[in-house]
Every structure is written in C-alpha cells, then in structure tokens.
Image (cartoon, rainbow, N blue to C red; front, side):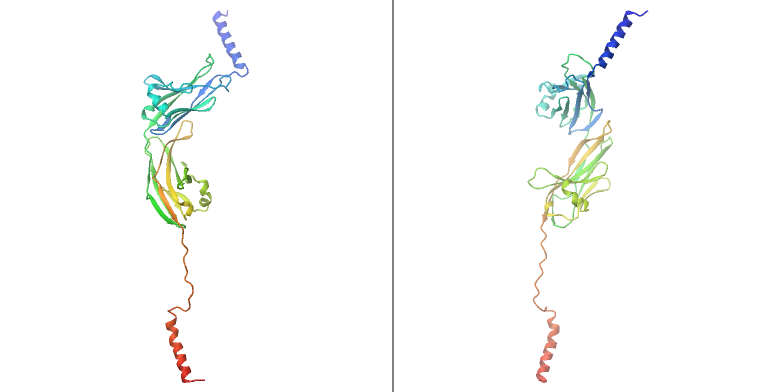
Length: 319
C-alpha cells in the first residue's frame, strides 16, 4: 500500500522534473576561477566572476565581494553601494586600490592593485538575489595565497652610452626569482624615444624560451640585426649589430614571473624592470679624401737627379 509520504515525495520529484523540462528554465550558476590563486605581495589580484541562469539576463545584476577572516565574513565592496564594505577596507576602496570593474551585465572583475600579506584568505563573489527564489548557486568562493615577491632584475649596463651609427650595441641584465612555487620568467627589452609616453618592445623571450620581435623591429630581427640571447641561468643580452640614428633613446628590460594555475594556464604574479640606459647615437661622418695636387714629395727626390743629368748632357752636347 502506498503511503501518503511516498505520494508527497513523488509529487515533489514530478514537479521538479516538469520544471526542468520547461523551455528556458535553468539553474542559476555563479562562477569564479578554480583556486587556489597564488599572487605576490605588492602586485595585482584579479578575480573574474560570472553569473548565468538569471531570468532576464539583460538586466543589470549587482555583485558583492566578501572575505572570510577568522571565522567571520567581512564585506569588502558592492557594485550597488560604495560604502558597503567593512571599515578596514574602506580607505582602499575610496582610493581605488580595491575596485570592481563591470565587463557586461552578468560579469565583473574584482581587483586589488597593491596586494598585502593580510589579503590572503577565502574570497566570495555573491550575486544580489532580486528574484525572491533560490534556484541554483548565487555565490562562489576561491582561496587566494599571498606569497613573498622574490623577483630580482638588475641592469649590468651604464646609465648612458654613446655609439656612432653602424656600431654594435650590447646591453645585459640579470633576472632571477627564489619563489618556492614553480614559476617561469619572461623577458622583454623596450625602447622609448625621448618625449614619447609609450615604449616600443624590441624583442621578447617568453616563458617557453621563444623569441619574438616588436612590430617596429621585425625587419631587423629577421635580418639578424637584433637578437636576445640568454647567457647562463640568469643573464639576458640585447644585441644590436648596427645601431641607427632612430635607436637613440631610453632602453630598459622588464621581467615577468608566471605561475601555472589550477586551470592549467599561466598567470603573471610579479613584474619588475631594470634601470634605463640612455643611448645616444651620433651620425657617422664620411672620410674626407684630399684632392690630387700633383707628384708627391716622395716621388720628386727620386726623379730630380735624372732631370739635372738630362739638362747637363743637353748643354755639353748641343744638337
């Protein structure tokens, strides 16, 4: 005999099944990257958050970010209320060191620009529920590990150099890291013309040791005039076989440290640049060749005795 409780359970299951079969019906899903995320002190943390399954997805969805601290959830920031966060985060939110950037109606990115050791913990992205029902996950959590920055970049070149056009130029830096986690370095040499705001990449060596030239230097790289050479474990050389007048400006190197995340992709955790070297390129002055002004003084002493002898013979034996 079928009991009342069994009929009730079957009715509920049938109702759920019919709901799932309704056109356009989906569970709400909130997603953040898979953790843990390792990031270095003093650098940027970015946590993207996306929600799907909200009815009328074109509507403006509001987000809140929290952090678990000593068993308590601390509010950090909200897209709908700038004063939403806990007082310990308020100055950093006001100074834009902590912010939320909206990418589209259903996606945002939570950003801390200057990460502190105390920022380590579990973060939660929560969607403000305006539907009155809870069908799915309206929040997602991710663990963030804040590690010491150990990246070092030091220039081995003087602060200024002078070359004549056509001369060779070699600059070197040392770049290394002692991060406990397994990381990879990429290195890029940059050139910046005096008075210009944005630098031009000269040549890069990525984390897989693959070289690639910047757009402005592609032809010279293809011709072998520009190269980036790794010497030993930590020295990176920029070699320019023949400098041009257009190479005059500031040259420096930037190293980026990458770590592989749980998603299998590599993410930058720290970056530093070397001191700049001011390169001056002088125009090559062509050699001046003196005009031919007759027999040289070296030639005259040898021929003079013969000329005197011919004159004397002509006087002694006139025709």
